[in-house]
Length: 391
Image 1 (spheres, rainbow, N blue to C red):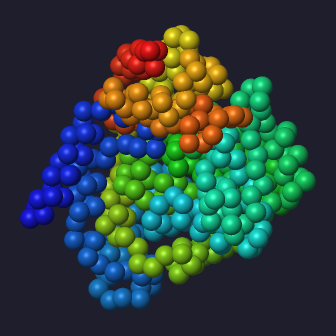
Image 2: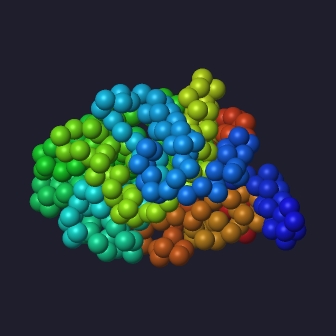
Image 3: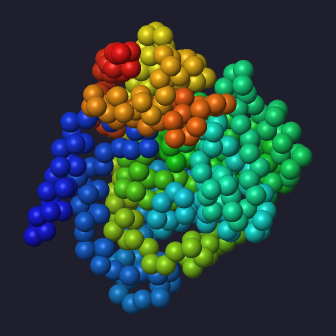
């Protein structure tokens, strides 16, 4: 590069990523092919609109790129093209979720989503997000006794509040979601069912987590977590008499975005092809094995794991009440000094402030990409225990 300052910073970040143990649940490492697509000449092209319906000329090749990404997305998740459509233009997960609400929920209407402090995402209707400013959140959470979803309570809330849409999905909930029960609740109150599978999309693709497509009307996902692609997002919409794909396409463009990032879309297409393989399915299965071994060892060492374990790629660890009286911020800082990267995270019914909550969130996707197995995560658990017990 001619710009030596940026080149030096890129090299420094590359080295940082190689030398640390990265346990951020929302991060992963992409392949060289994904990076090549991201840095390609496709970044030069403006392509407002959709394949075959652009507002600029010169999009013959771009149309093929975007169409290929759509074809690969539907194939990866085993979807019938007569029943499902996919929009691959959202720039990230937050605008993807906003696009669904813009398409399907009247302004001021009710979005029923998991509360942030119980493991939901900001864009599931939290008040500091646009999703909570233009729409009214109806929050649901988990049982205080089991720390798992309480479907009787969720149904009671839905019947009382009658939301326009119910969002099933999480950013810090370590268990499998019963999509059938969510479908039954949505049907009982006449709501759309949206599944945000951003965190577990790669596990669904790798047959290591139940698929939501049998039950959902709309499925959103980022592409950069367990799916191991570039930063981006997709929206899958069921084709029925309500014409959901058309409504969502209009919400993405021109509703929220202008020209799509076609280099990003090409990189998504590369990642989708990589995920449609036996090697990737083995990888997804290894993620779950690693996380269970990791969780089990932490509990053996005396740490409290929220809900008593995990079914996915992430663990929510209580370092305050169930630990040694360490705040999440201090735990995160200590671990980073030891070369282990995590994020501080609230636990359900947390009494500590968000800036220094009671927990940390741990994920295994990136270190599994690096080749680590169960025995390696046992060692990582012991290292975490050693660092956090130090006076």
